[in-house]
Image (cartoon, rainbow, N blue to C red; front, side, top):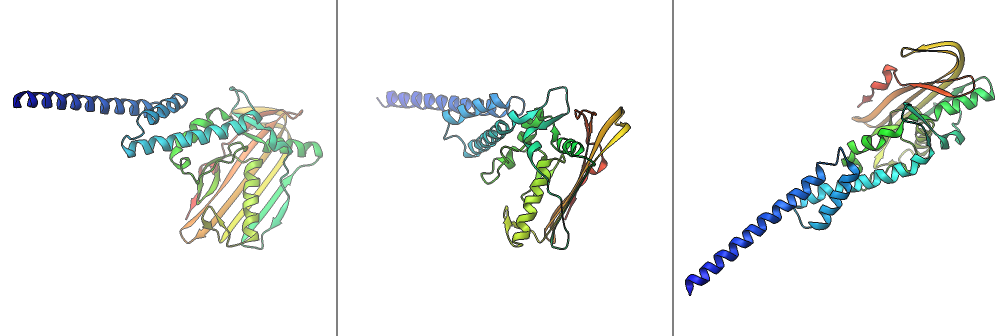
Length: 292
């Protein structure tokens, strides 16, 4: 009898062991199927990761938290892209796109440099037509085809519940420093972003922005548009075109070892009729920043 009981217990334990091993194997398989497609096939990864969490909600917390973070970032990025895609005019052959909402926005002309939070904005043009062309050039962004890929590369930062993407605003930034976005491409949206932040800082010098108090900041934006009989750049030659030159400088200080700044430049070439022909981001200043 004792022998039968022992045999029964042994067989039962063995089956439980096999079942447990198979369950672990299945969990690991579902997890790796999820994470291995995150970079190359994010839409497919979203479905696989969602299924993994649904099937194995009590798996190792380190693994489930990792997947939950990625899903949160993916959903946030998807909502952001949906909020901007319908307003971007571009095609796959172009390196640039036009963000239509920016065409109706106005960048103010202002000079306030005698205070801790300085603002200086100047736009140069010779006629209402040139002003319209300059506004169009300021509304030129990079082609959005790689936006999802670029944002997913920083998904860990975006998975933070307190990190928000500016829905309804085309992507002009490349990251953030001390809670303030850092410019990648000079655009209407970028200039107005720093202008509005500067106004908040001017109104209350102790106001927190993303948890930081900034003692000093400086916004300087200068743009111009000129008609040229000939213009050569980047191995390309243009005749009878308008050339818009935009320069944005921003600096912020929130302490002795807390600060960042940069200068960014964008050149846009337009035809006599106002068609965008090319965008250049080849100025060396676009590759440098300062950090304290």
